Amino acid sequence: MDQSKLRAWWAHRQGLDGGLAGKSAAEVLERAGWARSVGGVGPYLTLFSRAGLSREKVDAAVANTEIHELPSARSCTYVLPTSDFALGLKVAQSFPGEMKTAEKLGVTPKEIDKLCDAVLHALEKEPLDPDGLREAIGKAVRNLGAEGKKKGLTTTLPVALGKLQVAGDIRRVPVNGRLDQQRYKYTLWRPNPLRNFKLSTEEAYTELARRYFAWIGPASIAEFQWFSALGVKAAKAAVEPLKLEPLAAGDDRLMLPGDRAKLEAFKVPKDPQYVLTSGIDSIVLLRRDPKGLLDAKDIERQVFAEKGVKPLGELPDLPSHAILDRGRIVGLWEYDTAADSIAWISFVKKDKALEDAVARMEQYVREQLGDARSFSLDSPKSRAPRVAALRKAAGK
Image 1 (cartoon, rainbow, N blue to C red):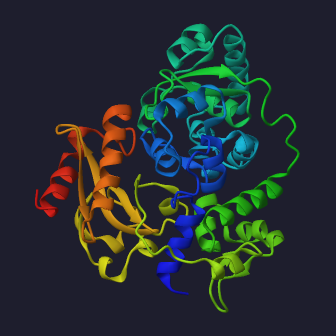
Image 2: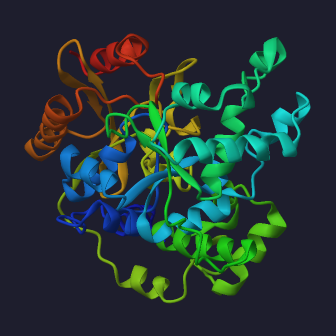
């Protein structure tokens, strides 16, 4: 099948063609997939690029627990809709979290269980941040010394908090209500979202696979395996009940039954559909294959990456945020806080529609977000070389 049609199909399934305009935050995440959250603006850009949702509306959805940041696939944090809270937590339970590291430092499960009880007791009174919890709990939290610091685990508190989160007993809420920062308080979660969840771990992974192939099919088992962090055998077992169909004879990319007919009937829009997304938007991250969203002539395009200039098609992840047209990556962008503007390059001839798309995102970031950090440690200073490289490439 023509790659341009596949790209446009993925964009369509992801709601990047305007099909999700006016939908709620939860509805967008149900259709497009869970939004990866690493302390950056990714979740906001996901919801703005598809439904035009303001930061105020997204923050209200967080406050009302219509969407929430939770440990889920691979035990990584994603922003999920209410309908998937229990599923996300269930699949997160397959991973040991920080307990494995703690055990190497002499921490026992019994010690963590006692600490969990102490945390729950402290949170009965009010939500608390980590400092408040340490003060309320006292000696129940143990300092793990220089060896713990070396391993990135200074006390036992994060172990208990992680265990309680994946159990659905507590949840963390952003101190200022925003998703693009990493300062939290912890609160009891009542009722526990897992209370009436009956699926086994194996059944939960089948449901995760069902969602995955609805979000981004056709995709390969290997791509689902990366997203879920399952082994080869477990990934095949998870998808087996779905009766997936190959995109074509001999093709390892698979689709849900019935979707292939929809793809064959799908018509690629004639006019450009420019949209600016984050560099870890689900259209890129779910399959983790930026090369599949590039035209052949852009695969060898030299771009500024973390370790110097590299061919774009060789990178496993995008070096900057993306500009797409019907699923094709046609440019890269960063927000320049010094100039309050977007620095960007285009792989195609610029026209008014493309410039208008950039202007819309620029206004959104400037007026509602203030910045467009890719992740928590991204900063205007660390980003400056990428901004400079984009401006140089664009001749500005």
